[in-house]
Each structure stands twice: as structure tokens, then as C-alpha cells.
Image (tube, rainbow, N blue to C red):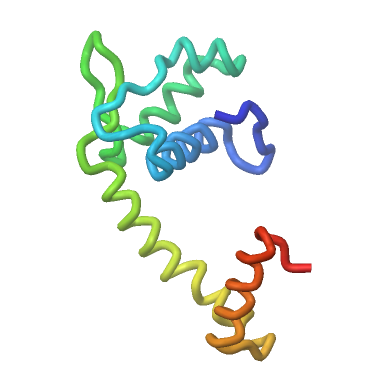
Length: 127
């Protein structure tokens, strides 16, 4: 996890989002234990209640489960559920803005795909 915090969002929410990203990226898999509240609080100099609040959001969403005396674990199917939710969010919230930009710029599918292929061949830069 990156210790740099964005001032625009509460830290507990950023912590939750970072754990979600770790699950989506496969860093944390189904059944994996999350770092303890104490360890995260100490490592990133956070109030343990802030860490707990971020973890509790994950529990409330069904992505993490508490096992008394053992810690918090990624639930089975969490990654699959996150992909489903993130795809739906992208289609519902982000895609309309992307599509509007594409239309505003007069781009078409063939041009976009050609640009992506060119960018990939150039090593990710499109200068």
C-alpha cells in the first residue's frame, strides 16, 4: 500500500479503496488474511480506529469477513464480485463521459483501436 494519502477523501475510504485494488489486482486472493489493524496503523501512522473503519466498510460490503481471534480474511468470490461491480460502475458512470469525449473529438472505433495499437508498439507512449 502507498503511504501517500489524498486530502480529498477520508483516509478510511482510501484504505478501503487500496484493499479493493489489491483484491482486483490479485495481490490479495480469496481466503487471504488482511494485515492486522495494529500493523497497518503502526506502519502508516494512522489511528487504529481509522483502519478499523476502512476494514469495516469491506466487511459491510461482504468482501472481507471477521474471524474472531484470527483476523480479517478476503471472502470467497470477493474478486469476482468486485469485477462485476466495477464493470457495472464503469459502464454506468464512466463510459458515458468517455463516449461523450470520443464523440466530441470526432473519433471512431477504427481510429481509436489504431491509436491503441500504435501506442502499444511504441511502449505505451503516444507522442
